[in-house]
Image 1 (tube, rainbow, N blue to C red):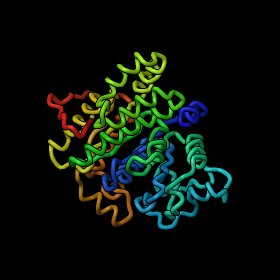
Image 2: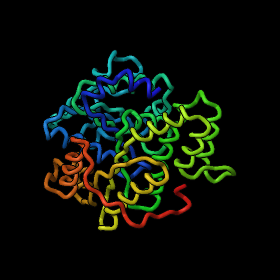
Image 3: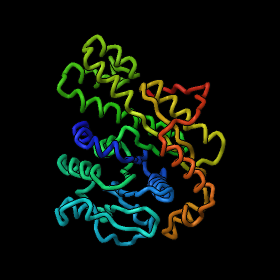
Length: 329
């Protein structure tokens, strides 16, 4: 489904930047980061649409100071309006427009396949230079499929062991979700994928490299497709709420683990420091980069957007010691 959607919208993807923002779990600050990214892109002259696609727990409007959005995504799904463009709202911030999913309608959290396809295709057709899509937390199929609208999604994590583990798990789940969608017509390949998804069982596969070795023998054509898929998938990592130098290094460690076990070249965009202005801004329903434009968090967001705009990888040093706990397999 996603491959078809992306091929149908190829010209759209080539002409604009799509940034999907996910969190490995709730509380990592993905909505704060999404808002910060949107405002910074707007400040640099981009025409931005910020989308709240956290359909089960929408709260992005509160960070923008919007208490009661006039239109929401459900108005589009229920055909109250005929196009996604009709639910795009103006904001008080330079270059930034907004799509809300406020209302927390239970059915929105469990989209039907056709509804999800409709939303994805419609978002890809939006007229804007940059589209920032704040999606839900966790690893549900909906979250993974929204994340896969682009090969360069952003994963927000925080410097806590469970968050780092969950972040690795999220990327792993996205990889296997993509494999499952791509090779669902190949029963033998799907059996191999199941072994990779369950590494602790008898015959389980602990790393993508092992899976590829077996796949090369089993089905060379599928092996080439899998290699291509892995090489095009380039997720970005942001570590939020950093309070020490060791915290800042966790992004590079996570990148190294992803490369080692999943054969995916993740990109560490940088860290956002713990900053009191972020919490103060949230309470006042004002974006932190507006309340305190010179704060450490605001300056960090500028650096991250500079790295996103050219999509060039900045110099990195892979940490010499990469932890290999069993829970990352």
